[in-house]
Length: 238
Image 1 (tube, rainbow, N blue to C red):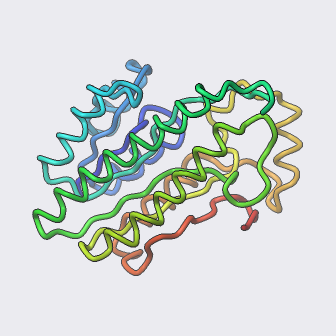
Image 2: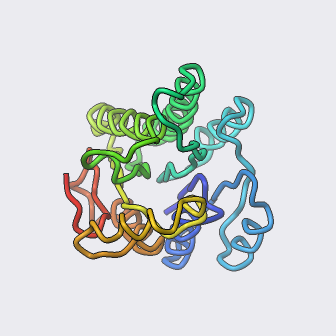
C-alpha cells in the first residue's frame, strides 16, 4: 500500500509513519518546520519526507497534484496548525474564520485529489483524518477555534464517506484524547494531570496507540467501516 501522511515529522504523525513503514508500506510524509526530525525519521524508516505548508496555497496545490497524478492508495490527514488558547470573548472573528478555512481547505483538497486518482484507476482506497476527543463531548474552554475546526472536519469526513463509498474509497476519523506530544507541551502540567484523571484509564494516550488504530482503519481488516469517528480516548465515549 502506498500511503501519504501529512504532518508526519512528530507526534501521532511520526508514530503513524513508523507503524506503516514497519508493516512494509511505501510511505510519503510531510513536514512543515521540523526538517531535522523529518530527515531523521526518513533515515530511520525508509519513508520519504516532503515539505508541505498547509497555509500556503502553492504548497497545497503541489501536494494535491502529486496525489492526483501518482498511484497512492491511502491518505492520513494529520497536519494541523496549533491554535492559541483564548477566551471566546477575546477571539478575533477573522482569525477564527481563517483557522477553520485553512484546516478545511487542506483536508478537502488533498482528500479530493486522492479520491479522483483512485476513481480514475478504479482502485479502492482509504482516508483517515486525525480529529480529537473534543468531538466526543463537552469541549475544554479557551479552544473555540480548535474545537470548531475539528467538528467541521468531522462533518466533512462523514460527507466524504457518503459520497466516495460508491468509488470504493472509505473515509474515517480518529478522535484521540490528549496525547503526550510536543503539540500539547505548552499546557500547564496541573491541567494535563487533572484531564488525565477524568479518563477511565487515568492517563494520556501515546502516539503509538493512536497510530495503530489509524493503520487498522487503512487496512483491509476495516473493509466494512466508513464514516466513523473512532475514539482513542482511554474510555471516554460520545
